[in-house]
Every structure is written in structure tokens, then in C-alpha cells.
Amino acid sequence: MNRVVFDIETVAFPLESFDTQQQEYLLKFAKTEEERADTIQKLSLNPLTAQVVAIGMLNPDSEQGKVFYQAPREEPGFSADRRVEFIPLPEPKLLEGFWTTITRYTQFITFNGRAFDCPFLMLRSALLGVRCTRSLLPNRYNTGEHCDLMDQFTFYGAIRKFNLDFYAKAFHITSPKSMGISGLDLGRMFHAGRFREIAEYCMADVRATAELFQRWKMFLAFDK
Figure 1 (tube, one colour):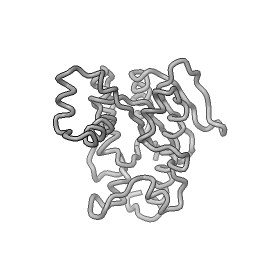
Figure 2 (cartoon, one colour):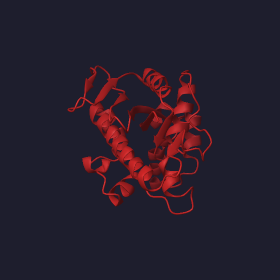
Figure 3 (cartoon, helix red, strand yellow):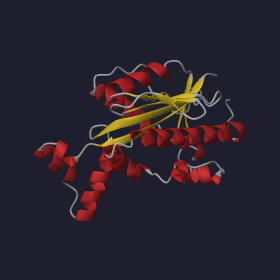
Figure 4 (cartoon, helix red, strand yellow):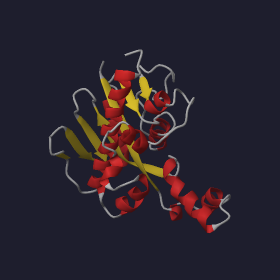
């Protein structure tokens, strides 16, 4: 089967980029400074208030992949092992690159993609006038098309969810957090121009997801 693992990184637009009415709407339930800060932090989780800054894609069988990422004035390059290509593009072109690439694969694999990455990509693309080439939200129970490892390791919500870092450590897989970066750091890093670091962090997420997929396929999958 021809398959690809993917993951995205997103960064919120500054609150000041929204007009007065939009700001009031976004903050209407924030009664304290702590709630305000929390609300602003969570703007990165919605495609109406955030942008895609990186999309990592990796074939888990060949271990070859690419990262489309926003990086003004940077040149394309490769990872040290030459297996991963880093392609700097503005957001609309980044999304176009993803939609062109995803059509080549029969199965795609994510971690919590159904609840986050997939709807974010589809709606963000629509907002920017980029055509989606396939639905990223097919039948939830058909892992042959979309295998969301969050669904698989919680048995579709039967048991507690954990984040990718926790699953990686539990399965003795190198966690992307070992780089000393978390999703909370990405906004600061993006505005500081640390674009390649974000791209590498994104690929670390993808690699951990790919390894987790191999464990699932070996021990828990019944429709391989």
C-alpha cells in the first residue's frame, strides 16, 4: 500500500490583526487576564484565526519525505541524510504543494488528524482559495484510507487520550519534545524568523507518528 504520514504546525495571527468587533467576539468569555491569555494562545488552533506554517509528509516505508514551510527568503534544502526535502513557500503555495502530493497516496496517517490537522487544512485552503483534491475526513472506521492513531490507541474514545509525546515515550520512541520545543513555542519562533527549526520540529512529529504507526500495524491492526 502506498501511504504517507503528515502533520501540520500552525501559528496564530496577532490579536491586533482582527478588527474591533472580531476582537470583542474572540474575547467575550475571557473575564480575567489569565483567561484572556489562554484565549489568545488558543487562536493557533483555528483556521479562521491562524495560519499553517509547516506541513511535514513522510512515506513510512521508504522513510523519504518533505516539509513545506513558510520561510521568506530561504532556499530549498535537504536533511543531513538527504531523505527529507525542505521546501520554503508562502502559505497558499504550501497548501497547493500538500494537495498535489496527497493525491499520490492510497492511505494517509495522522495523530489526531481527524480532530485537528484535517479540518484545519481543508478550511484554511478554502479561505485562501486553494482547491482541496480529496476529502481528508472519510469514513472514520476505514483505516485503509485514513488511519488516525488517536482513534486507534483510544479504541475510538473508549479509553483516555494522551498526547503524542506521552505515547512516544510509552512506546520508547524518540519524542519530538526532546528537541526542547513544544507547540507553545512556535509563535515566538516564527516571529523570530526561526523557520527551519519549525520545519525540523514538524518532521520530528511526523517521524514519531510514523514509528507509532509501525507499532500499531505490528501489534494492533487487523485490516493491514
